Image (cartoon, rainbow, N blue to C red; front, side, top):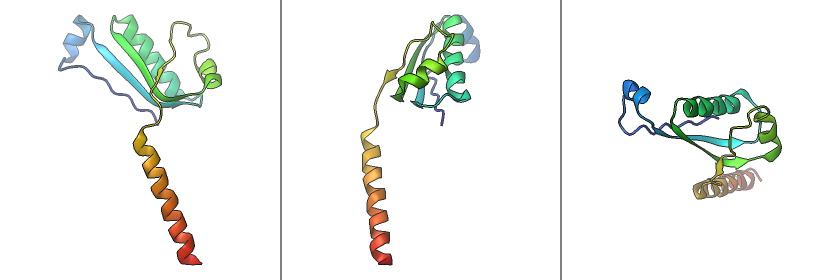
Length: 107
């Protein structure tokens, strides 16, 4: 799933053309080489061409997939890897407990 957050600090569309804006492009994980990933990188390049400051972030980055996605896009830096949010581990453990409870109830 592609998550893109644009933090524009109250600027309207006209101001976007006149002032440089700092934009954070966030993708959950670069581990497949699909169209959503390529679209995010094209957005990065377009924002840079317009004079904006864009940063790339991801929770996970697979090096092989990154090489395929960025083939021919030498000007795109690797995203800052944020890692898995701690809350995800809690949800994962809760899911395991639900499965175990269902197995015990069926037994």
